[in-house]
Image (cartoon, rainbow, N blue to C red):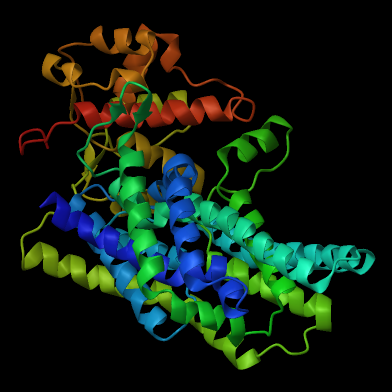
Length: 494
């Protein structure tokens, strides 16, 4: 059953490879500078490497948008996105897999009554808007620099041809690595919160987390899609929008690789924050949008936009808009059939209770809530609606109320402690967990407070900007602990 439910993520990975490989090597293949087979081999290898070693940065963002907490729901979100992408791919259009996955998550939120985090959604949309703009700017700058450099060089035409071919392969490999790092969240990100797997060590040399296992499988699926079905879209990207030369093909892929790196590098994000600069949001952006933006940048720098095939551009833009809507609709309808016809669990119900102790804890965060104590709500959306109607809390304050009111069932028992992955936690953090043996908690924040009381290693550091990376890693550890000790609630518990 696990393999069956994961199959839709593999299907989505195949669709992404079939569609987005064109964004890395499409211009090189279409200009006949690199053979398709060579492009497919290089792209497949580096996509897998990027997914496994650098894929964690954008996965958390999709989790913030909507935490799909059951494998049945993860299956349908991935399937809805994959079907939408496949439909567009068959039409020869380089659509955005990122928009398809976001559409699928929104469809899951609508079906289950979960809230779509508007702040996270705004961050993702901002990334989408910046992606083609930045790609156009980088492409124009790189093109002008390369043209100046070639104008001053005395390379023979054969030397220039050989150098261009090598440059296309190298920059394509970098672009493929960036594609895997940025877009693997689209393929398997929705499975990370729901997959019941454990990490392990390989020959005692290095540690492979649950997420990295998924990233590896997803990366392989992308590579298979590259080999089997990407040639058609490569020709659309390489020839359909604007006629590219081998040199401008290199510029397009270089600009795309830079943009994907900006939106997927945790190290770069930490560097910006440590220097008190606004970081690029770690969101899965569309490599299709990056390539189209880069091609537009080339067209503007080279011919001031002349030669652009506007009907082709209009079709691509239409695909970007329609894809998330189709994905959301397919996901919503698919979830209905999975749950009501096939009796598959598509989400783990979470209720929300604004009790006296929740109100007291919120007061400690500076949020005063007057919803009657003990009142329960079936979904986060219901609680948010009640807060909007009965209080004057702003969006951030309502988000805090929803987070603290979520009812959970956590039990620190010896059997679950024995299964903890000690490589993910420090000795002090593990000792704090052992000190809570036998205790149960109704809210996740109660467990966090108890851990902090036992060890300051579980405490978030106050300066959010200076300690961004530490706090982010701590949140990941807390999420792991919640999943490790969560038990199914009975009707009496509810």
